Image 1 (spheres, rainbow, N blue to C red):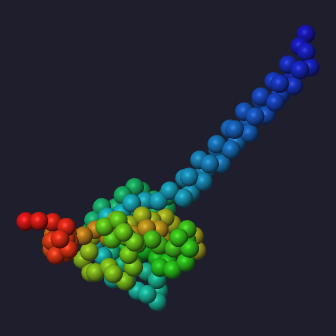
Image 2: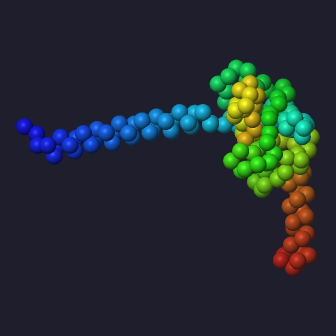
Image 3: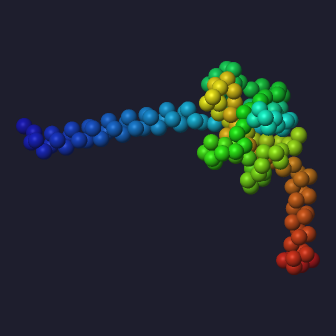
Length: 158
């Protein structure tokens, strides 16, 4: 025969295990819902009034849940953006890892776009984050300018 103390501890253990399993299931469901898709593209245009960008897809990334959001390599695609607001809700834009403005994007610039289905329109894509990548020529010019500035400041010797 079991003592009441053993029965209570077993019940408490079962309840704790059930709570752990249920909490883990909710976390997995939320992670699937908010998982972003990484797409590589070339920038074409930005419409500030409609708050959208148009790009030409280079590499489409993972398959979205909805077929209407599917991207095709070499084709144009439109993404909804939110350039202002809280860091949790707006589209974050970076240039070479540093914060940038969405208006700094130039036609033909290579981008990494991290997107999810738009909450307001499930048939639209919302760009959570856009990473602008410098071309080799732009990187060389920036590095040359930094080197010259360091020489002028006396930080480097020839």
